[in-house]
Length: 284
Ligand code: C5P
Image (cartoon, rainbow, N blue to C red):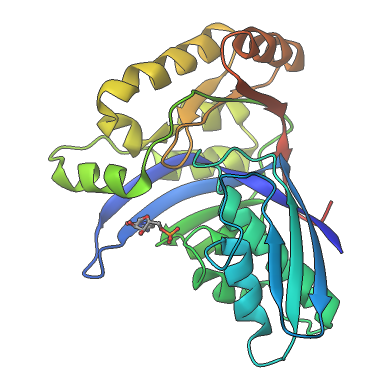
């Protein structure tokens, strides 16, 4: 069975505090994009698990989140899975690539085995694999709270164009959380305002409120992120921000031609740039 694993963006991302377990309470407006990995998933009768992760530098064993998800779903059934990934979502980029693959595997195995779990039940399983997996199971737009597993569905973005640009460096997620813990004062995104703008179908209102608290603690890498954000807004983006723990930056455009020009201009400077649009959920 072939399924698509859509990438995610954090249109806004707030960190509220650190819990006893070391995990952080988040508040993030998340959205899937029409851009992702393709996975070919088949069941094995002998209970074996294999993965072709699509890139030589990705784990090809049980450390891969797609395999973790498959093992969890098939536990106790005697079945295994062969998984082949066509990797397009940038790796260590804040777009939830590993989580999206895990979620796609859960959806595929649910169909292949005929188990018929609800999306809610699949999302709960996914939470055991990674904090972003539940959202990647449900897709579309949602407010994510808790570790990221408490999801409230939101209206999708109005039709728009999205330019993605990942600078050459990657950023470690645990390191950024540690920096957040050490910081005293903090700017917060206007999450309620962004939700209201989504409810009104007000793209400019959403874009204007795009903000990620991690942008505040990037240190010397901040200038690289700021340069892409400025380029995007100068070329017509209504708003731009870093997604997740970076380093991908997105810009939201109401003008498809302006988005194409921005994508072309950035692609001349950065190796990893994409032009896409919002994905409001449902299988491709
Ligand atoms: O859950 P996941 O494995 O995706 O998280 C990766 C790392 O990100 C965790 O080990 C933790 O350091 C950090 N994290 C966190 N708070 C969250 C989600 C992730 O501190 N809500």
